[in-house]
Structure formats: C-alpha cells, structure tokens
Length: 252
Image 1 (cartoon, rainbow, N blue to C red):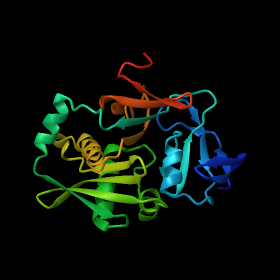
Image 2 (image 1 turned 90 degrees about the horizontal axis):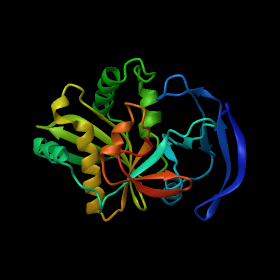
Image 3 (image 1 turned 30 degrees about the horizontal axis):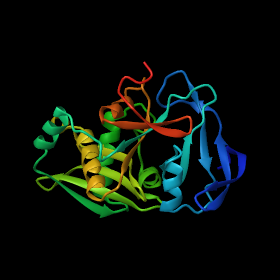
C-alpha cells in the first residue's frame, strides 16, 4: 500500500468504524482510453466480514482479492455500480434460448481455493479474450491474489459439459445478495454464451435463496467490456448516494 494516501479517518461502515480510506495515485483507465483513473480503497488492515462488505457494496464498493475499492476519479463518473433485483428480473427471449442451449451443462458450488484445472481455464480465457490488456500473462501468484484470496465467504461455481470444465464463476455470498466477482470460461465455445449463462445462473440462485440482489460491478456505457450489463432488466444503478431503477437508454 505504499502508493496510497490516507484521506478519510474514522469512517463508520456497519456498526464498527473503519479507521481509514486511501486514495490511489492517478493511473491510465483500464476501460476508457485516454483517461486517467483513481480508486478509493478501504484500509487493508480493517477486519471485513460479510456484514461489513454488504454495507460497503451497497455504497458502490467492490472487492478485488483482499482489497475493497470504488472508483474515485475527479473528472469522470462513468463507472456506475449496477445490481439486479432478482424478483423483478425478466428473462428475454435470447436468455431463454441460452438457458435451453445449455440444458446439459451442470453447475456445482465448490469451496474457494486454488485448483490447477481452474487456473488453466483462466489462462486460456485471459490470453484469448484479454490479449494486450495487461492481464494476459497471468501467473499462479497473481491468480491466487486476484481470485482465491478473500476475507468474506466466496465460492467457485463450476460449470461442466459432459464432465469437462467450461466455466467458473467466482461469487461472493453476502447478507442481501450475491456479488459476481469474476467469470472465466472456455473461449472456444462461443455458441454457449457462457458469460451470459453464468450471470443468469447466479440470478436464479439468488432468487432460490431469497436473496434480493445480484451485484454485477460497474457498468460503463461507452466501454465495450462493461456495457453488456444493462441487458439484464430491470436494473438498479447507484448514483448520488442512492440506488434507483433504470433502463437501457439511460444517460443518452
């Protein structure tokens, strides 16, 4: 954390105060070319459990490994937290087709931890889908730090076709919903629309468990990597310190 600077003290999250928040240095934005980004981090030494993270995520924060953050860019507010209220979610015709096409895919929830099979699938996914994006040379340590290290309840959801691992959805289990941390899948199976299918599965699982929300991270309208999230309707976005329902044509 040597590149972070203390900016806020004694900020209360849940019932116990988190001592400090830290602001990162300016760095190139990963999603919008030509822009600079900054991130607000929770004190990495503060104890975070599911209850606290539930509070943080409801205020627009996300988790990456053991770090909890949200964008804090002085000249830009393009990164908008988005969640799906699962009871109101309506499958589209294309969603129904994707579910039907994957009728023989089996899902299994496994405990968080490093598995070589997961890691090799992650490597194939990253090197194919994110070539040149700064993540395309993953090693074991970076993989573990990114997806296996967690201080909250995290599960790996395996998706298999005829016994072969084709996708993994890393998911946090919170007090009032599921948080989709990251999904990786076999890049040679585009006909299965595995990224969409994994989100649809998480929405259905949250509904089955009577959890009200699935958090999908940040929606960025003008980023091809991030604007797909608005296809899940109705959706709620967090702006001006409150959640409100929105539609696909927002901010036009």
